[in-house]
Image (cartoon, rainbow, N blue to C red):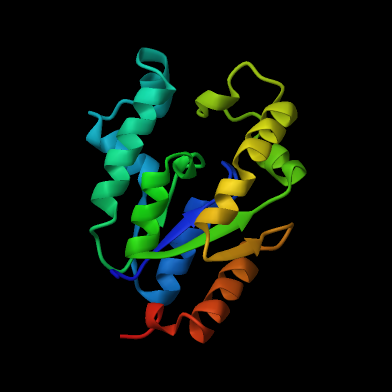
Length: 178
C-alpha cells in the first residue's frame, strides 16, 4: 500500500479543488490525473485527444496514466470522471491507496458545468440529459470502486475537506500520520 488517496466522481464534482485543499491539510503531494495525462501527450488537450483519436484511445492513455500514478507515494490524485470505466484502473487504485467517491446531484453538476467548453463528453449535448446518462451508466462503478463515499451536496469545500479528514483520522489514520 502506497497510501495514496484517489478522488473519483463525476466531472464537476470538485475532485481537483478538494484534492488541492486536502493536500494542504495532510501534507501530501497533489496530482490531477487529467493534467498529468495531457503533459504526457505532448500537451494535447483532452478535447484534442478525443477529436484527433477517440474516447477509446483516451481511455488507453488514462489507463497508462493510472498505472504510473499508482506507483507514487503519499499523493492525492484527482482522477478523471471516467477512470472507473476500466476495471484495471479500479484495481490499481485499490491496491495503492484509498478511493474516495465525491458524490453529487445532477443539478449541482449542471450548475457547475454550464458554459464549460473543455469537456469533450459534454460537447453539443443537452447538459442535464448527458450528465444523467453518464451518471446512470457510472454510478454502480463509482460505488464498487470507492472505499468511502462523501455526498457533497451544496456543502462548502472546506466542510467536505473537514469530513474527509475526520474519516481519515478515524478508520484510516495511516493516511494522516507518519
